[in-house]
Length: 183
Ligand SMILES: [Zn+2]
Image (tube, protein in one colour):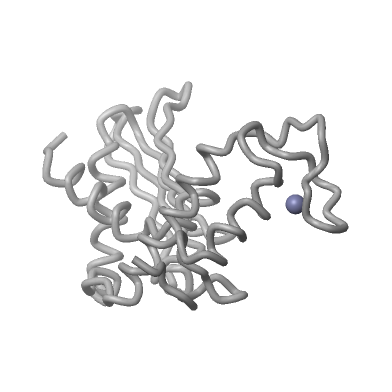
């Protein structure tokens, strides 16, 4: 398989990752016992989610391995094919995306800032670890247990850092940065 298509898939994946998409969506490449390849690409939350795709079925000659089938079903691009068709399946996906070049537009400064803000909050959340208690969070009416190195649960520890300007604050729907850090 040529390296170009792998580089292209890497780039496509990178563009979709926004601090949110990659947690619930993604790309899967598996093998089949036919034998062959099975490629699943989540489209939800990408520019391709509302684009129509003409299903493709290809079989050539007598060679049992020379087949390929691609469709979009329930928001997922699904491509399967013989043992030497992985590159061809990915190229079908690329050619479809290339018909709608909007997906490759550079990210706006606001989007870049949002990704960075989500990442900073995520890093703190991961560092805080599990809400293991045994004491409850000190915030009034909070029923969560505290994390190991704070008297609060993770949400309230993060909220306190946001209150003092040590972490950015996102809008309620999480779609933009509402307050920046104070430094
Ligand atoms: Zn709490």
